[in-house]
Length: 142
Image (cartoon, rainbow, N blue to C red; front, side):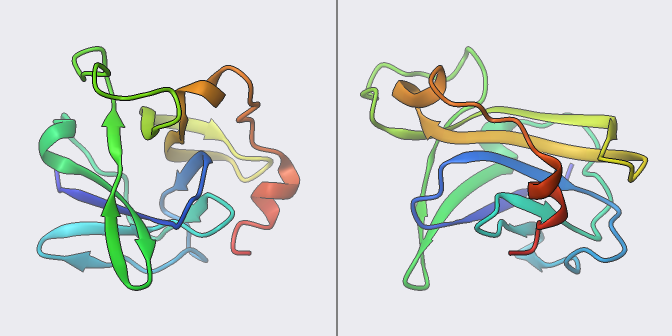
């Protein structure tokens, strides 16, 4: 397992989709031996990276940030039931429902390996539809 650094546009909320092995996707980028995923405003990243393999220790290997004026602001993570919500209010922006998948059917593109997660407040979690539409998939780089 290689560490991952996810860099999101400032104030982005919604579902994030990372599609791997994409010939037309962004080139692989590393910093300090960590994969860098620069998530576009669409929330959809198509990358030439192969899927990251191995067991993921979210505390050690996964890091999420907002990019603000060339600075990185860390985001809270709630990856599993072990993570604490005690000190978070319902308006706090967190990363949750992180998961990887194999064989996701991507709108006629065949089976695609993916990572997905949600960036939002707990207050909004049950109020929003995080589904990916074909139009969003087709306009991934905007």
